Image (cartoon, rainbow, N blue to C red; front, top):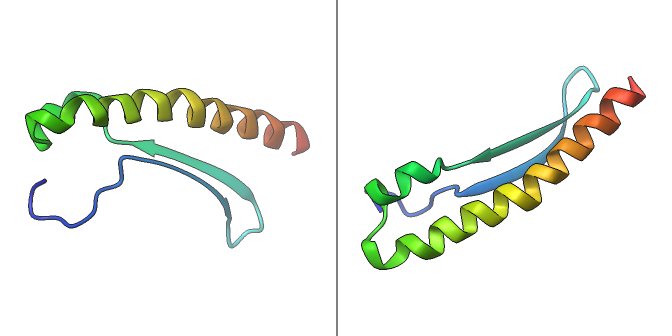
Length: 72
């Protein structure tokens, strides 16, 4: 990786804001950047993590967003 000791590949957070609102945050490294950043022998694993993370955590993010909107 480029001069970093850590990188966020996929993340999901449930946060409480200063205004006492619950919000969710979902982020991930764009899959099209994998080839630019990672060595060739790591790319398939990273892409698999991203695809599975998007599926699983993206669904969870959408679920919480729907639930929070209903409760408002």
